[in-house]
Length: 258
Image (cartoon, rainbow, N blue to C red):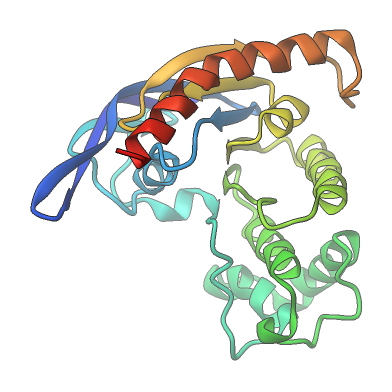
């Protein structure tokens, strides 16, 4: 059953008095319970697309549908983790992750136990009373992920959630995210420009072109989890995705050096 559908999404920004097109007639869908990755070169418009999906930004043309209804400023439908952690500097780690419960009028005491468990699971035990300025960038991202999960939404939008982490920590966080996804059966749409991350996590990958972004390819990942990066099928899929992206990455490079 289709949960999310983007139809003919086009968007432009005004930059230096000229129109900069970032999305071009973009179409894709996400089924209930799927883990889907949007894979594309940096700067192709992925974050703009998320802002449109979440209702924070109105597209120039096109529509987004959630469970068959057109989205109109409906940010409350998603758990949205943006690239920047957006933590409140005057609140401790624990109070930052409990914001969702406060906003939604839920029991703080009940949510607190779950928050402490998630913080421990993501390697943040002992930092509950710390403030954001006392944490590394990677730790702040993990706090932001806990906060997003505690909003308890059926649909998660994750914009490069592990981009600030080192390789070892990223691998651990990917495994934890998959465990949480398997347990809660949420629908996940992930932005990444890391081919291996997309393959490790996703059921389906949409490859985006360079800006203005459109869908270049839809690639299924029919590999059982957990996925071994040394398996021949995974290596072949990685090569295929790299070939799809290579032309787009070269276009970005050429544009930036004109």
